[in-house]
Image (cartoon, rainbow, N blue to C red):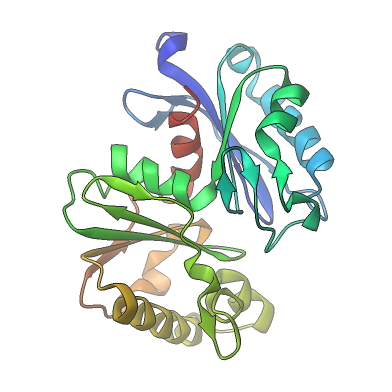
Amino acid sequence: MAKSVDRAVGIDIGGTGMKAGIVDLAKGELLSDRVRIPTPDGAKPKDVLATVKELLEKLGPDAADLPVGICFPTIVKNGRTLSAANVSKKWLDFEADAFFEEGLGKPIHFVNDADAAGLAELRFGGAKDQQGLTILTTLGTGIGGAFLFNGQLVPNVEIGHLQWNGESIEKYAATSAREREGLSWEEWAGRLQEFYDHLEFLFSPDLILIGGGVSKNPEKFLPRIKTRADIRVATHANNAGIIGAASLAL
């Protein structure tokens, strides 16, 4: 493995699963197997912390002395979580950095999950050296988004909460909506088409990247979607959150 100063642990906390891995910070690649544990019911801070500790144990002794970056599906500013769309309301205005640093006994960096994925693509993937506006969309329990403009991240862009028929568009078009309503891939792609049409009308991106768990099955929906901008799967797919979170750990 690379030297410890070139490595960090990235932890991606999602609405249904929590994933972690050891990341090579020079190459933006996983050095370990990715480990996963289901997100605890309700996703309360103390239960999430306990699961983070389990993930670190699963990574073994190689992870023991490494810095840790954690990404999470909320607005994050100055180490505080300011929203709670698909997790416990206890995260509202919560001192996440301080809570996890005390619980883990080491410095950590907390960041929005889509922003972490966006940074992975900006530094090591599909948005590297890309001019103009790239929008990364993460499709999962909700819809996350990262705006990447001329090599810079615009943080905490909550595109999953754009209003659509009186509610957040993620309720209509996220992967969880397909599963919850038993939609066929074709039916769901129709909803995604509406989402991306709306996104293009509002923001006129130059490139659209797709991440999240569903990015491992692009052949089932992506050919059905037509956009003015180039649209493709994010380079790091569902590992982007882990890689981006780790890249902020130092």
